[in-house]
Image 1: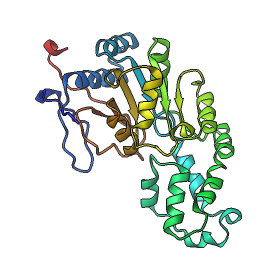
Image 2: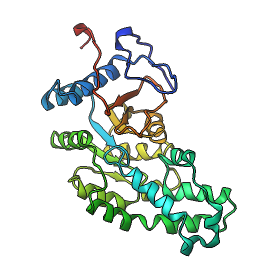
Image 3: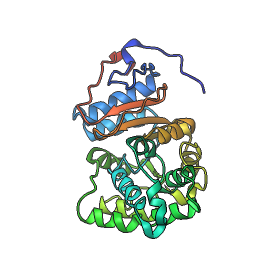
Length: 289
C-alpha cells in the first residue's frame, strides 16, 4: 500500500493513540477531513460548512458500520453469546466446558456471533460447532427487539445525525455490517434510519468474506458506483477498519463509548476520532485550506 509522502508536522493528529502506537502524519486531504469532522462534532462549524468541506475534499460516498458505530448494539450481541453458552437445550452438557473470559469478549468485537462461537466450540472440542453456533445466533432478532423496546440500546446521536444530514444533502450512503438483515432492519427502523442507506451490505451478502476482508466495502462501492478515493468510512473495530482501509478508502476510526478502545491501527488514511471527550481540532495554516 502506498504511504503518502506529504508531511506537515502541524497536521499530525494528537487525540491519543493507544498502546503506545506512534501517530502517522496524514496527507493534506485526510487532515482537512479530520479537522472538519472535529470542528463539526465540537460545534465550531455548522452543517453547511461541514457539507461544503467534504465536497471540496472530493467525498462523494460515505459508508457506515452499524454495531458500535451507529448504536451500542455490541453489548446485546455479547449478551446473546453469554446466554447462548449457558443454553442446555442447544449445547447440552457442553455448557460445562465453556468459561468465557474478558479476553474472549475483547476478541469478539468486530466478529459475528456465528463465527466467534464456531471457533470457540471447535477449540473446546464441541461437536456440530457451526450448527450449534447458528442456533444461538438465531435467537438474536427476538432478544434485540425486546431490548430496543425496553430502551436498552443506545444510539450514538452524533453519528446518527451525521448520517441523516449527509443523506439529505445528496451524498451516497451505504451500511456495511456483519449483522444479519433482520437485526439491521430492527436497528435502522428504531433510530429512524430505515430509508437512509442504499445499499445495505449485511451478513447475507458477505458469504465467507467477512471483515477484515476488504470484500464488504469493495462490494458497497461497486453498488454505489464510486471509487475508493471518493469514499469515507466510519468504523469502530479493528477488523472493520482494516477492511475499509484495504479497500482503499479513508477511514474514521471511532470511539463512541468508554468501553471501546480506539483502534491501534495507524496509517495515513486512518483518522482516529474519540467522541467520548471533546475533540480538539489542531491548527492548520490557512494557506493549506
